[in-house]
Length: 292
Image 1 (tube, rainbow, N blue to C red):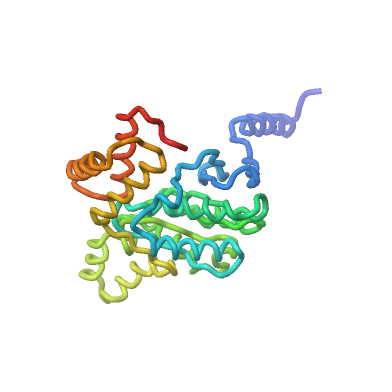
Image 2: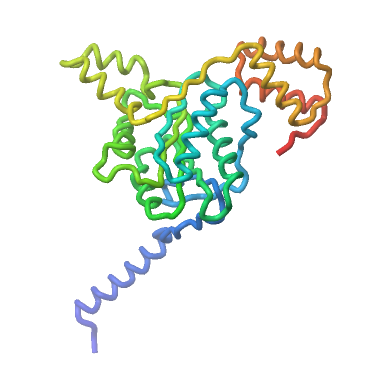
């Protein structure tokens, strides 16, 4: 008995569905949040990738930012304990330890807490994935854990409108930010937007003040603004002394000072990053491995 046109069509549809199923990527499995304290958000795959070895330094090695360090630690500790806390914007001079401080504070708080359910999770979200922040928050809000969402070097350019998604995700949406999620960001820009972008809005808008308010209101979503400023020569040398002692590098004190100042002069700046780069160079020349 020959197939009817309907039977032929159904068979072809079944073959088409089977072919598409083989081509389509598998449905991502939920990440086991027990396996790590730090994750990276993969927006394309809609999953959290665990980080087995976090690139961070001991909080005691971050010098010259004592006041902001204490404020950030207190805010994070309150959040980890289930108390009210603010989103934080760490802004200011490059290389002064903004991102290092976030990771160091997270590690310090977890070291004093019991493992498993009490652990505070740190999730890094890349700048280009900010518009997927609502999707990530939806995945996290039902979890028993508490999460710091961390975006390093956050800023927006002239033709970038994703900052509006961030505004809504932080505090402007109907549902609001989940109680178990807080957002930390670092930036060299105080308002996250270029100064000339704000100035252009002021010069071309019908109502200049309203245009500027709309642009800078993003930074208002961060309850804490922690400023980082260029360090003095004494603070720079203190950073290097701390690194040298921590990594047990053997060098004469006068020679260390002279080489450290020469290194800063050739770089044209002094910062925590420059101090760490000098320490790496020094350890290499001395043939001494650095501690993990």
